[in-house]
Length: 189
Image (cartoon, rainbow, N blue to C red; front, side, top):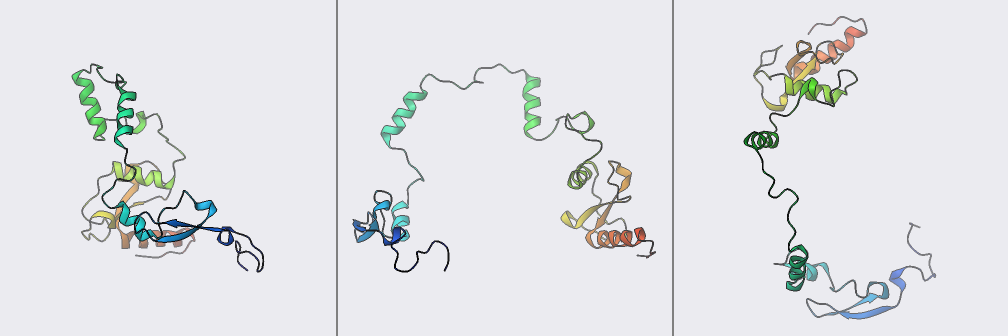
């Protein structure tokens, strides 16, 4: 017998408890609920619940609540309101928001020369190296995600000369051949 179901003849679970009659807020039909759901469930079905929610916000505030929130915030101002900024600071903040002009590369405080993950090295390569239009092996024109960065030495160094831009098919063949080269079997592409 599955977990959660009572054994036959034993009165366990909320579904066997005493039920009370309640009227649906939407359609006014009478339905029954166990005692534990009184004051928590107000609709006879999901359809009635969703039709009652049409045109309403998820949790709208009453006019009284809005007034109280306004009174509580009265006189408070933002922590950074009125702080004078120089033109250079504004330009720097603007560039930072656009993702430009930040500290990058070896000057960044989280820079790792050694011990970078596979994904980290590949994301570094895609940022630092400019993707060519054509594959460097078959010279087929590709764009977007079909162009991959393959590591020549398979040591995943941060060296821009150690990377090849390959189409997906050539990358697969390149890695497949390297696997056999490491096992002392020569294979040609």
